[in-house]
Length: 428
Image (cartoon, rainbow, N blue to C red; front, side):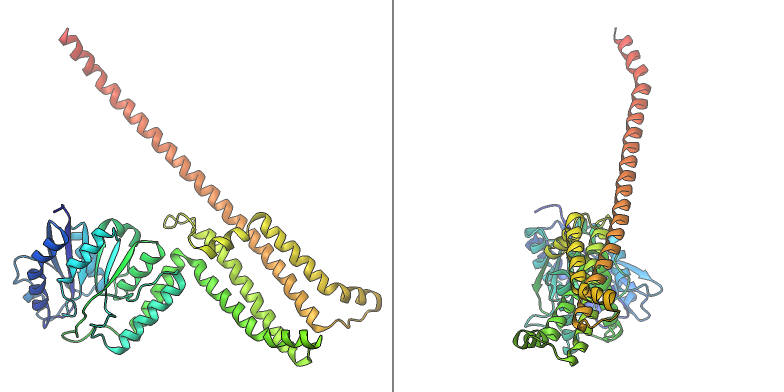
């Protein structure tokens, strides 16, 4: 057995119907959790989040737990964070007070967290033993799909209400919101910050009492917090997803005109509308691609993200810098001039332009792309200057701190020297 403790936090808001049974089950499970997971002990903290019923009265009848009382509602996440702050566990966990989760499952979560060195271990409520309502199950699958699409890693239950977190990982997860969107925010930050997160299917029972979750408004909050997590850690993911969608749309829209041209060596007049739409969507897609490279570089300035992660984001970041960007700008400039040159010559010599509209659209697109790339280059230079200044300031502060430490050590040494000499004199 090691010296690890588990802190279990039970956030409760008007759960008088279920809080007693939940505490009883947690107390009964303590010994099994400690024995099976090899823990020194388990502590239980109930946080009443502004309850107006008998929740606090019932919880305070138990002597082996700590009860924290918020007079006013602070939020589901705020209650959990306060319990974690007060707890002493190296592993911190929580479960809902509504009777849906079995506290004995903490033993499996803790075992996995320790054996697999996981930062976050959660119980997935979407397994075969789940009694989760269909609308919430559908919402969870949608959130999980979006999060997986944006960060390239999969979690089936983004809002699980039973988890174990290594306390040392909290510095990478905080700040977390105070509301019910606390759990999807944690999932998003864990995935975006490349923490090790493991899911284990668990039994999920029908809740006791009335649910505090609003499918519509809390669903909107969940989507918002997922988006904020992506923008905080991997902003290029959103732009790359948009760029991919634009390219797919162009391929579908341009497929028939391309096939028609290779078969007949001409284009129909009505196809101009497809070309114009493709130009607009293509320009928008290029903007998104350049934005992904720019935000990828900007995110690296944050202390929360020290390096770029991901194959495509790395490719984009290296492709649109320095010489590669210069080559791309040069090629697109030549291509644009090539499309428009016959029309320019014709206009200079005769004052007329009979150039086919497809060449005008293609030329306009390539030259507009060049303009976008040049603006992007300037912005990247600005970010590079910021990065250089940031490193310089850090180096100056680091050197200053080192000098202060050296001066302090010298001062302490000088103060202790007379005493040492006097001691030596007495010894003689």
